[in-house]
Each structure stands twice: as structure tokens, then as C-alpha cells.
Amino acid sequence: MAENGLTDSPHVDEGMLHTWLDGALPTDESAAVEAHVVSCGVCSAAAAEARGLIAASSRILSALDDVPGGVVPQITRDGELTTPAAARTVASGARSVRSLRSVRHYAPIAAVAAFAIAATLILQRKPGPTPKQNVVAAQRRVTPLIVSGGEVKAPAPVQSSEPAHVGHVDARASERGAPSSSSMVAATTTSPAQVTSQSAAPSATYARATAEKAAAADAGALRLSAPASVMPLPPGSDSLAVTGRVVAATTGFPLGSALVAVLGTSNGTMTDSSGVFTIARLGPGTHTIVARHIGFAAAQIQVSVPVGHPASVTLALPPSNLALSATVVTGVAASTGRAAELAKSPPVMVGARIGSSYFSDEHAVPVRHTVYVLDSGAQVTLAESHPTTIGELSAESAGARAFAEPRAMQTTLRQLVHSVSWVASDGTTLVLSGAFPTAELERLKSQIVR
Amino acid sequence: MTDVERLFRSYHATLVRYLTRRLGDRDWAEEVAQETFVRALRQDTLKNERAWLFTVANNLVRDDARRTARQRQQLTLLRDELVAEAAMDEVVDDADDVVTMERARETALARKAVDGLAERDRMALLLREEGLDYNEIAQALDLSVSSVGTTLSRARRRLVEAYEELQLGAAGRTSNG
Image (cartoon, each protein chain N blue to C red):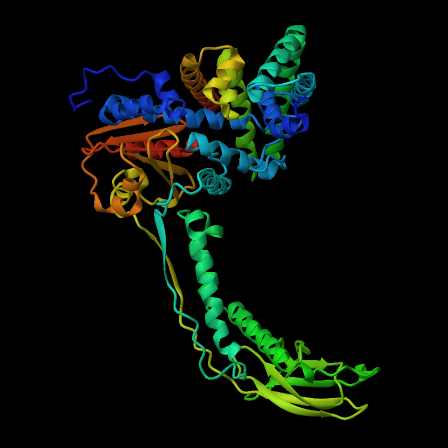
């Protein structure tokens, strides 16, 4: 068991282990326990079991909430009472924050959600001082939006600079957001990758938004530069209107949702699905109507609106190639070292997908927890601890340090929680534990015990 | 005067959940929680308010339980059985709803396992689940801080072992029947 010469030292008793894991020890004592646990195979295994017991009992207690005659109120982060459906996840997530893992195995989807929430909570509880949480770094290659073919050929200089400007702001926003919402592969809604894709993705909505912004800026700039051209409208001028259609020049198909504006004014509208538009409230005189549609070059036409007579026009828009290069958003597990090794080495991890990964230092010991979701939907948490700083456990350095052969390997099999722990030659402790549905038990048992 | 509204907002939900888990009876839990906050109203100042609230709630439960222990127990047992049966019947009707069945079974097993714990162990565990730290637990249960870890470790081990035993038993019955 303990092959490290520490056989003589008394082992940490169970109560002390729980106190330590519950984060109730003063820093110095905690450090002492940690030092012993990482160097003692027996205690390392005991700690793994204790973790399992904490998680399992937490899970059992949460099952009590399905009480007859009423549902136990749960607390959200805001301290509000919630409805039962949402509450279950929230509650188990909240418990996971402390117990590190609490999985309702019969509801894998809910559990995943719970983990996402738990992970979020952890980050929120520890703002700032955990900068290196990017275990899974979202790498991106942002290629700026390339507009070619003169799609937006408007005269205002504001317009040409607008797309780049928008892109720039978005990119910065996503980088700002990254530290606070980092590292959560599962929490895709807040992940940097998501934000990034919004800022740089060549999606139609983005391009359209840009075009619209450009158009708006265009109109605004022109209005500012030529305020005098906005005529006070005579009474009854509602009848003075331009109606028309916007069609594709090549095919003659109507273009819906095309922007149509009166140059030099803020007056404008959008075509309906059959490409028809009406611009009302025009003064008599000559106006320039501009139509824009994504994928087409802008077209403009001069219209004379005679007094008392509406005008009718057709604008044909020539196609324009919007060359949008592909944006690649990739999520790469940055820890190619020990964690990846482990993902392969214990048989139980075969076929596992990483759910999420996060650090905790609540026991004064930096621990990185990686949640794996097995194909069966069961979840496994891999906790790695090392008696150094979190910085050294960061994604970058983890890859640089090869994981040595486990010195001590303990397998704890419980019906609810399975724990496997290693102590590497460099003192790194690795604990793999998870709660599996009963049906999973035999299969996993045969895989773990060899 | 303590800011009772704030107190209520902060701790009512957690207190009710704790009590419900402990008592297995939502209505009773609500009553006790209510009374606890009424007591809080009468206090001028509250030190360690969370621990105070849980302590008072525990005392109320104890007093209450003394009076009505026998009836409560019988009623609870009876009701649990009925609920468990109903849950099972319900699920059998809906073969797809394995989750519900599993959940109902888990709840029943968990209830039994928790009820099998010693009172102090159970309370320590449930208080810990509500996020109380070791000092608060010690205060609420009139324990020394140093013995909280031991109490919790014992409670957790016993709970898990009892649950597993029950689960094995339940599984055995299922496969036999």
C-alpha cells in the first residue's frame, strides 16, 4: 500500500478526512492533511472513499425532496423560491458546488444541466482569483468579414468602416467575457466559443445586421450633413408616396425584407415578402430611393413625385458576391498530458466524453475536477490534486508534465460511487469517482477490477 | 429588532427543505418554520442567525415530536406506504415512465435510510446539506466543533451503507417477484 516510507506515520482518521474535505480545517492543518494524503496510499484511498460517501449521501438526501403531499421549495442563486422542475436541477447543482459531485443518475440530462449550473456557480463564487481555468480552450481563427463586389456602395465613408468596426467591438467583448465564463465546455451558452462565433460568424443574420447598421449609419450621417433637405411636410402629404417593388435583376424574383430608403432622409421601409414597398410621407419633388438586400448590390433610382400623384418604381438589384470566409471555432482539450492520459488509461473512461472541467480550491488544495459523461449518460468526475498551486495545475502546465506510473492504485467499489485513485511519483493525486445507475454496475465493475 | 423580512427571505426556503427532509412531512415542516420565524420576531438581536434558526427549529421539532410522536410515526409510516404503492401502481400503468418509478423507489429507500440514522447524525447531515459550516452545526446541535467531522463521517457512511443494503434488498425482491 504505502510504498513511500510513510507507513510509520499514523493515518488520518475518517472524521478528520471529512473535516478536511468539507473545508473545515484551518489552513495549516489542511495543508498537513493534504501532504499526508498525497503521500500515503492508504489515506489517499480513504480520502477517495470519503469523497464518494459525501457525494453519495448528498445524492440520497436530495432524493428526499420528492416528498409526498408537496414539493420542497428550492433556492435559486437569487434566494428565490423556484418551481419544482427547475428546482431539482438547481438544488443538485448547488450541492455539487460543495460536494463536488452529485449526480442523479436516473436523469442524465438533468444532471448535465446541473453540472453546468454547478460549474457556473463555482465560477461566480470565486470571481477573479482563478484566472487559469481554461482547461478547454476555445481556439478560434477569426477571419474578418470580407465584403467584395461593392455590395454596399453607398457614398458615406461611415459605411465602409462600419463592418470592421462592429467586428472589432464584438471581438473585444468576447475576450472580456472569456475569463469570467471560461473553461466550461458544457456551458455552451456562455462559452467564449459561442460569443466568438457570434462576433465573427458569417451568418446571414450577422451580415444583415451589419448591413443594416451600415445603412442606418449611412442615413444618419447623411441626415446630419444635410438636415436642410428634410422638408417640412405639407398637410395631406401622406398621399404622396412611392410604391414599388424590389426584384433581383437576374431572375426578376421579388426580394423580401430589402431595405428601402429615401436618400438624404431617415424615411425608409422594408419590402414585404413579395418585394413590395411603400414609402409614404414624401414631399413633392425629386427623391433618390435606395434599395439594399443582402447578397445584392444596392440600387438606386430617382423618382419625381408630382404634386398629388404617387409614384411607382421598380428597383432591380444586381447580384453581389459576398465573399465570406469560413470561421472555424474549435474546442480543443488543452490538457493533453495527465488528464488525457487518464482519459485513456482507466478502462472506465473508454468512450467517455468530457462534460466539463473546473478547479476548486475550497479545501486549500487545488483540485481540478473533470466531469466525464459516459456513453450511458452516467457521469464520472476525475479529481486531480497536487500539493502545489492552481497555476501549476493549469491547462498549459498539465500538458508539459507527463503523468508517471501510478504508485498506489486503489479501487473502491460501492454501489453508488466508484472511486479509483492514483498517487503519482510526483505526489499528484488522482481520484476518479462517479455515481452510476445500478444497471451500469456490473459492466463497470468488470472493467475497473482487473 | 432583527430584520425579519430579510431573515425570512434568506432562510425560509432552506429551513423548510431541511425540516421536510428531516420530518418527511411538508406541512409539518412549514408549521415549524413558521413558528421559528415567529420566535425570531421576538428577539432583539440574533447572533449567528442561521445557527440560531436551525437550533430553534430543532427544539420546536423536539417538543412537537414528544407530544405527538406516536401518532406522527404511525401516520407517516402509513402514508409512506400508501404513497409508495400509489407511485408504483401509477408507473406500472405507464411503462415508459421508468424515471418516475426509479425516482419513487429512490425516495422511498432514501427515506428509510435516513430514518434509520441516529437523530444527531441525521440532523448534522441535513444541516451540512443546507450549507451550514462546522461551527454552525456545532452550535445548532450543541456539539463540540471537533466532533462534527466524526459525526458527519459516521452519518455519511451509515446512510450510504443503509441505502445500499435497502437497495440490494429491494432489488432482490424485484427479481424474486
